[in-house]
Length: 260
Length: 355
Ligand SMILES: Nc1ncnc2c1ncn2[C@@H]1O[C@H](COP(=O)(O)OP(=O)(O)O)[C@@H](O)[C@H]1O
Ligand SMILES: [Mg+2]
Image (tube, rainbow over all chains, first blue to last red):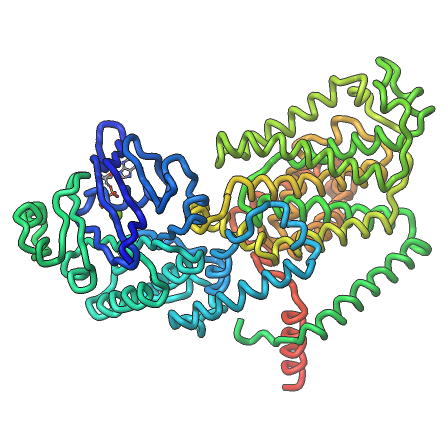
């Protein structure tokens, strides 16, 4: 149970003169739900972009189980078992809800040449298609989106789009799920439902999850551990209780009257 | 789409088979009875379907903006002609510089020549797409545009292969309605099967949001290259069919205008819709024939219209610009014609009639 899933050692990313992530070290264990918080511009999204291979770190090392993530392409990292959502929803908006989930299973095909088996509709390809469809429908049912299966993704209400993005990430069969501000733009009611939902999928799929959240209160209730970033640096780490009373954290958030 | 009537898979299969048989019958009748002019138009429609559907796979489905289709058509045309042109004809044609070995000894039947033309074109497609997609990604349009022109310039100057500006004449007129419509069917079925498979979903995902596609584990680069290579294959096949229809080719046959024409068909039918490309190709081909009147003199009341050569291209260019500005979705948008759609509009029509 206590196996480390992801470990970051002194990970650094600079954009010109700006150090967006500054020697970040941290880890997440199997089945853990970890929060990543910090004021706007703290470097949280950049950290996700580093883990998922969208950016290459300037320094440091990232280990996923025994695999070094440095230098891997985003699609390779997804195939290893890390999936993510985006702060600004990035659905395939002109595709249906079902197709959005189905396409996330395309990565199970490993060779470009299997394309021919799909063009010529040989039985193994048809079986793959059937399995993907069945699996996707099951997944949609689990997250409560099955009745929208044939709607365009862009036609969903905002909150459901967020949910669909999570379902799509789950379809890649990840071991680690990275959620970037999943509650952004939601009202308190929707937010608390979403947090319950996140907890449920963690239990049901046996996932490790890192949730980025701007508003600290939102994740206090569900996370076992929290990392706090400010100006690219890790300024605190601990249980929600420890974080709430940490003077450095209070100071970082003082500029923003929103919290605490 | 809630109103769309759903037919069973069996009904649809039967309808599709019936449709193909009916088309085959019509083609057989046209082959025997129709005038040469009508046969030519029907051949051109089929070949333009091959061109439009293949370009649509690249531009509409995958969302990489290629402007190099004419280049791949040229490669297919020249490759096939080098393989099928009778040896004596080759000896007569290459006056400035003799044709290089082994082409001067080869005389192949049509089918292998078309297949090889497609494969060579696909190979060039790979050579173009791989480095340019890796290096410049979104600026592929410029690279492919440059490439299409480069191929033409090479064709103009590689005398010992292409016979330069003199071009090639006396190409055996192998292309008939069976070949052209047979290949049109193969193109449509292949591209449609691809698009409706897991690979097609991946291509559309790349078009919608390539960053999200990467995050879903899709190798964006290799899928874009694949799409480009498949598109180039059929551009090459279409080029081969075209060359053996018009029986004379020279570098001027493959200018940017050719790409532009195909782009009009695709946009007119709807970027991203295969049935749209078929419709676009048919309308464009027929429309171009009707606009022929603009190129010969005529008199409207007391105004003498002198007839301007090339006028129909001007009209069509204006049409494309208007299309792109005011009706970007084209006839079909991204939708496909399906039996479901036909059935539901038919029943709607019937209901409307009764009332
Ligand atoms: N691609 C980029 N180029 C330049 N600067 C960037 C880029 N991405 C992020 N940044 C900068 O890095 C800092 C951290 O951004 P980000 O990780 O998005 O913060 P957060 O998600 O914590 O709000 C910000 O100052 C942002 O402007
Ligand atoms: Mg962010």
